[in-house]
Amino acid sequence: MRMPRSVREADVAGRTVLVRSDLNVPLENGDVADDTRIRASLPTLRLLLDGGARAVRVCSHLGRPKTDEDRAKYAIAPVERRLHELLPDERLTMLENTRFDPGETQNDERFARELATGCDLYVDDAFGSAHRAHASTVGVAHLLPAYAGLLLLAELEHLGKLLGEVERPFVLISGGAKVDDKLGVLRNLGGRADTVLVGGKMAEQLRVENPLGFEVELPSDVVGAAAFEEDADSGIYPFAGLPDGWLGLDIGPETRERFSHAIAGARTIFWNGPMGVFEWPRFAGGTKAVAEAVAANERAFAVVGGADSVRALNELGLADKVSWVSTGGGPIPGRSPID
Ligand code: 3PG
Ligand code: MG
Image 1 (tube, protein in one colour):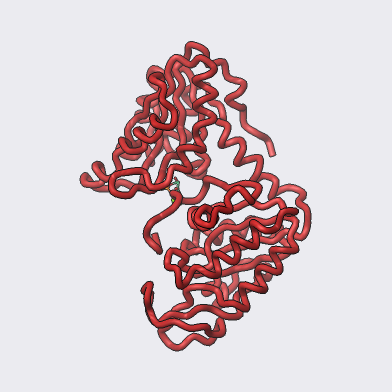
Image 2 (cartoon, protein in one colour):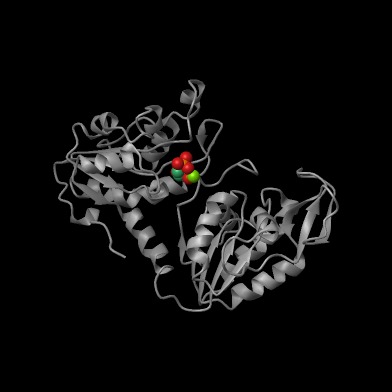
């Protein structure tokens, strides 16, 4: 993979630098609920400040604001506060939520110029937003000398390994609720894997029809629930044998064992998406089993991405047991079970 020009090559002394980070973090009661993405953005900011930058202006989107009320809900202030707590330096400032300007998502040149005004160079460190052609991610890169930030480069390096020669077996585990987003990941990476394990809502969809062109391993048993509720009546059922109207909210014990066994034998692992509604303790067992199996395999190169899988790892205290925890794929962690 051809890597973009690194921020390490930039001469920043005395310059004003615009940095696009992805600080789209979950909020709770007007405060940052999880600062993983803010912490992950610090190495680039420190590098710029240590390099003698005159000013570092950080910009990010936050949420998907649409209405006027959303402007209060998604104001950048709590993020800015947390950033300053973590990195107190008066040369560091934050711009308001880029999505408050409609020009952002339209990749509008006027807004890109506004962002670039007064800046000498641009650093893109927003890996989680790299798939969006917006004014702050793409537009400004045409107006200022552009460099890639350290997080962006590290993500490309680690995730890029999965696209090259990998040690085998390569086991890919996919789950979660956002089936359409995940299908794209599966399509691109799944064909390179030796074994593809699928749980969660995605498994339901693939049981009906598998458009992928390669085999996947689906659950054989599930934890069924009479309703989508935390305390719903529940029980273990064969994957295809749920009572009418019931929902599969987790993989069952037999599936957990089979998936864990496959993960234990892997030399390369990519895990994206929980196996069930793990925010609810009664439906968390499958995701925990996968997290534990991934963490226990010390010989594998293991990459975990996606808000919920990362949250599961964090909650189990296992994040430092895997090779790379990606900041891509949704604010980490969401508080609503199906957000
Ligand atoms: C994310 O959390 O998915 C990224 O920050 C991108 O946000 P978006 O999906 O709202 O563009
Ligand atoms: Mg997203």
